[in-house]
Length: 470
Image (cartoon, rainbow, N blue to C red; front, side, top):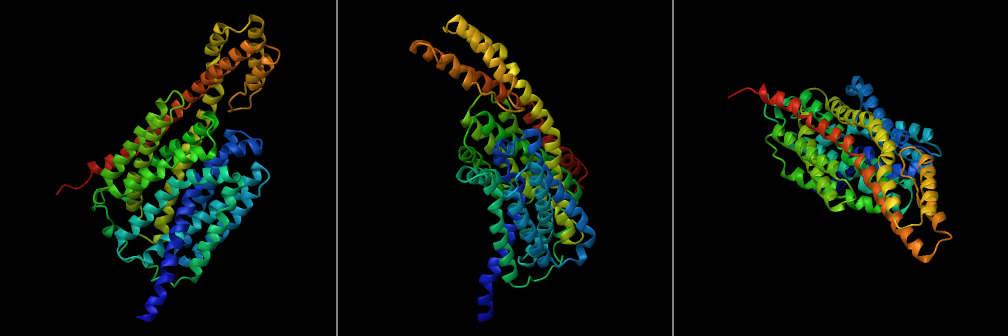
């Protein structure tokens, strides 16, 4: 009795460290999103290039999981988890200290490789500390979903309070604590797959196979890019919110994810996953229809996205992990499917977004011209101002909003108090028109994200049609 009492605290600590490792690895795919605008500015790059900070991590994570599958039976789970955490932590330090985008991308690849190792090793250890297959798979899946959802909010807080580098530097001590807790904890009950084969999965037999669940998971992951990446860029780059303000808005995603996960029907993964894909698509469509800065509607849309994530991700992940084979191998397949969906989403959406952002200021030119011509500002001032605004727009870096402050400041320098007031009002009007045009440029990529999410209904529908009748 006494020995058991002594071991319980360390066992609880080890279990917490495993959950922390899972959440950290999945959050890292999205935690850097809120730092991207600052990375663009500090490392003198563009949105089309900075997306490699996320893509490189996901690609390395996928590659590492695929490479490790043949060696799954030879790897000790606890040793692999600790090794993954060490690699992940050291690469986090390297990412935080990187002085250029290429160096940062290289370290992100190393970080992704460490994340792949720790994620694949975490499932067998998770199984060793829990009773029952359903509890194991559900808890692993819920932890993974919440980690992905909370990433942008955490990244925004760290970026606002410190710097973009703090996002990566802060991960190193977290990984170190998780590694030490895993080492100090008791040996796992075993890495046995007993009780975790396809027959004991929460999903009804013959309804949704792990293969179809992984396919649907990839589509939903691709759609989630709209909420985790596109919404972040819109909040910071277009609506000019501070990272902390954007983090407060994005915090609705993990809150809705956690609430929806608790309400998801455990007995019908097809229903939960389909409902989640539809709710996510609806949230993305609402975001796409926003034509100007409307934080209230944005909160509702992101809440829908978070709810869709909470309904679909745990249900699909639970079924995907419930197939046959080593737990390490099952985790590798599921992680690869999920991160592969994120990569596909980024690869498809980035060129569309960049093209729309580059064209947005030009779309606003007719409205801006009418606003200048109809203003009570003197004619010569209008002509000079128009010419300077055109130059500022032409010299704006790719995928960034033009800075019209200097042209208006120059125009107002030698004007009367009345004209200065008119120019200030005109500047506000011009900024609003440009902001609306750029906001509308997110419509096409967000609608594409909603379509990717709805494509998850294809494998789910196929599973429903071929389900054996009783």
